[in-house]
Image (cartoon, rainbow, N blue to C red; front, side, top):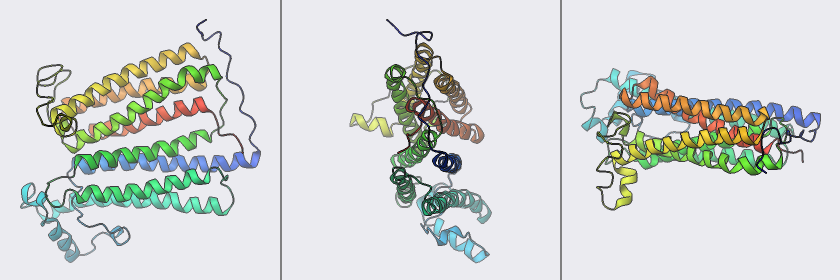
Length: 363
């Protein structure tokens, strides 16, 4: 017989975690929440850096020395001279004044500085927690993986910038999408650990069986949509076809597969990239509604119902921000809200799946 909310057994209490471990977990959890907020800020600042065409203003990668900005007129002139040697200056910004250069420089410098802050905010407490014996043995490799992913993100960021210094006037959309997606993977990984460290009641096996597939599907679609959004940003596709729901006067426009080979259209054709981003958004809305309805059908526990409501509400807001960003031709403030809510939707997806898994058992 099909389960109904009245026939499903409520979630069972999680086996008790020893008091000292619970206190350690609470400290680690709130530390990870703070890192996740910094990663969210990093994604927003990265979006602003892209939209203001600031990402190529610093043409060298100096992980340590680069934390200090130019402090004299001579140092500013030196940085500006390096920028004037790349194609973006010659084609887009020729004749730019030093003061105009400073504007784009500060966006990129701030983006890189925030990356350094995140690295320190993760590494220093990790060492302290580790030295004090507050990290359970099974948790250590999970946190080290987070540190490794952060290092890879820094290297990928420079790899992305390097793509725009020689033969292009902007960075590769492939590398930008990968950079954005990895940032969100880091957020998801750390938020997953944090939510699994939170005390929660265990859902029933029937709830898990019925809801885990749709939860996993939603998470996969969110990550795909974030990657596609990175392609849109990399190609400046949001500045084209600024009507909704039609694209170039049609629901399914002509010209989606004019490039050869066909697969290139998925990554390099501005119309196709925007089209697939829109279509994936519609699928996400459908799956969010399905997830909410299925959760209502399978459970009466707010431990699951609340994350399902969050997912539905955040997806609706994200659609509103996306449509507004498009039809208003990408105003900076609205575009940044759209980018921030992509991470918030991702967090809601992680929270839902963490609720299905419950708290990590003590071991």
